[in-house]
Image (cartoon, rainbow, N blue to C red; front, side):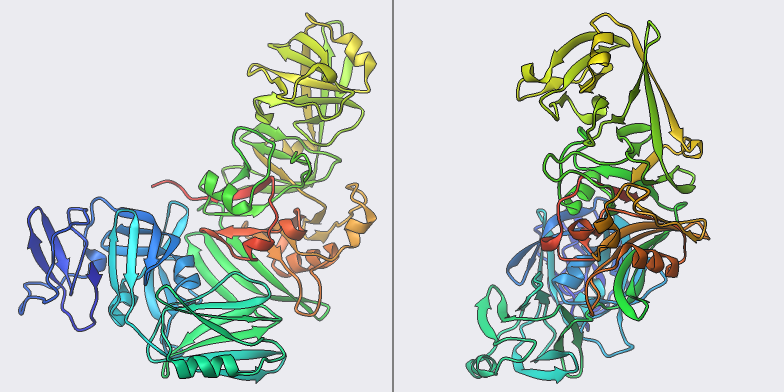
Length: 605
């Protein structure tokens, strides 16, 4: 067990088979094990040498996915490495109640947790396995926490404290709830858009609870309910606006603001080459909350990601997709059909078409050298028979269906199920037609896609069916328009294109979006490129004064962020920006499942 009383010196102690670092009770072995050997809480009177925990060598890191906080079990990644106990940064904010402050150094993260303004606690930080870990040792030492890692679980206990009082304070356009405490305690706001649910690691006497329940409901925060929970209390009430929580010292307080403009602006160097920013951006006097990642593509790489690496079909929450691909960050990308979960736009990964472009819509392409380009893209594909007959192939691996020929390769998945009943499906293996059958004869399990070939879905195209009998030799030639996009092995589609070479080029009708889509106001996602070569992954949400941005307003926002080029991505409930284990732009309850995205990856050590 780890316990950091602030007054205890740090020294080395011994135990059979281990050498321990001891400041109070320590459970980190220098041999890399979490040992059952008892370590006395009384340090030696005259230690031979002072050794900082952050410098202790742990040769075999321990890690896990479960945190037990004052008896409450939570799913939060943690790791013990190089003498540090790291907790995923969202665990420090969402379950302890700390506030991340601005930083320009990705290896140091100042946090506010029951500290005076201007006097934060600095935690060392590092990115590992897709998460950013913060060393909680300084907080544990400062506040006398007990920490015990082992068996995939990290137990963290904080000293007991009591709620001294609860106060409501009216504010302009909102309300403030102040929880006064006898000492610092973990504080967690449950994920809810229209309710307060605050879990505290504190107790309260009957008088405080009685007074809290009796306090009249306000215009922004309803009547309080107080109930005991594992290791503390839960306060609940209806709320008319989003909530923001901060902690303060002298006296110890938890302050919750209920107000429409709840976004906390910040700029955090989250990792080398990645800065997490969020702030309000005004367009014609209307503020919009913008959440974005500013990425140096020479220090981190982008890759297309989709629901399942074995198939182009399907949807899942962006968080699930990002973690499946072990991406550190991600943004939702292209459009898709919500009913059959088929992609509707370009996804090319390492020169393989997972899904082809449609309707000459906007795409973004990039390579491993950090070069990025955005254009309206078309893919011309021509099927040629041995006898010289030529047929246009309209789409590859796509849910976009029209009369003509659709091409489905192994990247689509192991099987293909006909999209419409009138299709005729042609099987091609090693450039030779091997079978042709109507969709009505294909079972519900679909038709296998040959690993060394492809399927052709002929839709209202009798001439092509007659030209493709079994035994016919065929070939397919492809060209990208414009050809300048051909060298980019990775492509993701969206649309419409917003900015090209510092010029506003928004034209939704040109990219065959509906008139309603072109004028709709909604949350939006976009990708941008700056003059310095940085990539912006951006999500913008509803204004405190009204709905989210229109396409034109989104283009203006991207210009204000410094974009020389920008592409709109799928928006509305799909607009999701993931970073290190959580969505940073919205509640996961309000985020729709998506088909594909753009993932951020760091070089492996």
